[in-house]
Structure formats: C-alpha cells, structure tokens
Image: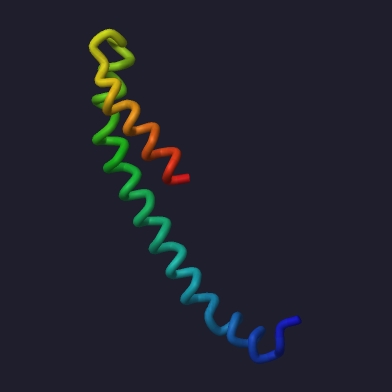
Length: 69
C-alpha cells in the first residue's frame, strides 16, 4: 500500500504528468499524419492496379507496422 507521502507526490505531480501525456499525444498525431501522407501514394497505386504495385515497399510497411505494436 502506498504511503501518505507517495500519495501526496502523486497528487502534486499529476498536472505535469497530464502535460507530458498531452505533449506525447500531439507528437504521435503529428508523426502519424506525416507517415500517412508518405504512404498513401504507394497504397493508392497498389489499390488502383495491383499488377504494378511496389510489393517490396508494401511488405516493408507491414513489417514496420507490426514491429511498432
């Protein structure tokens, strides 16, 4: 069980933790948008004509996505 001091520190630090969480969330959303912008042309070409798709790049996208999670 947490001590009174630990509980007090948790209450004292929550605004800083919330700020860090918000910063991390904005950074993730900004990065996600740039990744989507870079990958959508490759995916749309593959969707339009599967015979001319860049399967090496598509495989790399899937590999990166699975390793990220």
